[in-house]
Length: 199
Image (cartoon, rainbow, N blue to C red; front, top):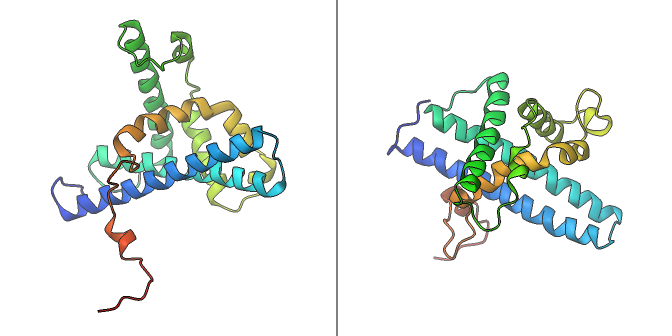
């Protein structure tokens, strides 16, 4: 389906994107809280399982959110072949890192920016492929979720690629976060109210 600005279908797609990013953001916030708890020494299985789940959900929702961004850029909701997605993800991170280098070099970077060398690190050319595999491992029952096999486990993925996918998350949250004073309420969420209504 084509996405045409101003149409109800386009608005519905944007609302679905907004919901996906909200799920991503909530998962990442939960991951940060649990990681802090774990770093402080709480390492019982319940905390570890919640920590794993929060990061897995973050990966799934971030991946799906960006797929919707690419579809919106293309102006249609058609599926994008995974090899194209792999390339799009890698190129998106390269662009974000190059943009930050430009800002630092021209003394326009935000005060929280790291040293230039942090952004000069080459983006692994298999980033998109590994991101997709991590998303698949988290979304499907597959023995590679546990053993890795020809895919990284979630922890291996986090250790090697988190820096790069964080660029995707961080750049999106400034436009898509719904944490403000007046969060946008989505119609498909509001209609899910199961409470008894009185007339």
